[in-house]
Length: 75
Image (cartoon, rainbow, N blue to C red; front, top):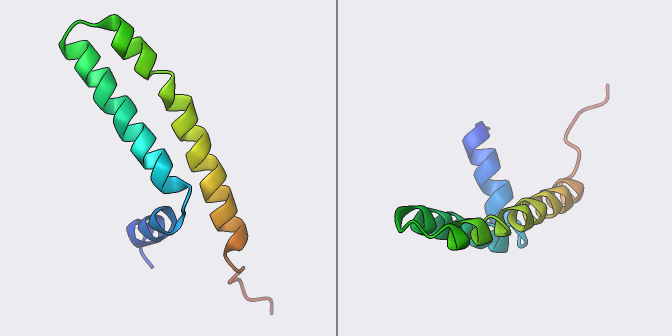
């Protein structure tokens, strides 16, 4: 299985990862908007959303990895 397919299956199959993706997209949009309009308060405020998105991804992927069965063969 390719890395892209595995990553897509894990991220889209994870229920916590979807809000993390939403939070990351809002943060990215707000940072870009703040930089384009020279509004540093908006850009710096949006940076506060980045750790939340990273933590949500980490928690979601940890739960997803714990739920996946171990497919290694023991011979």
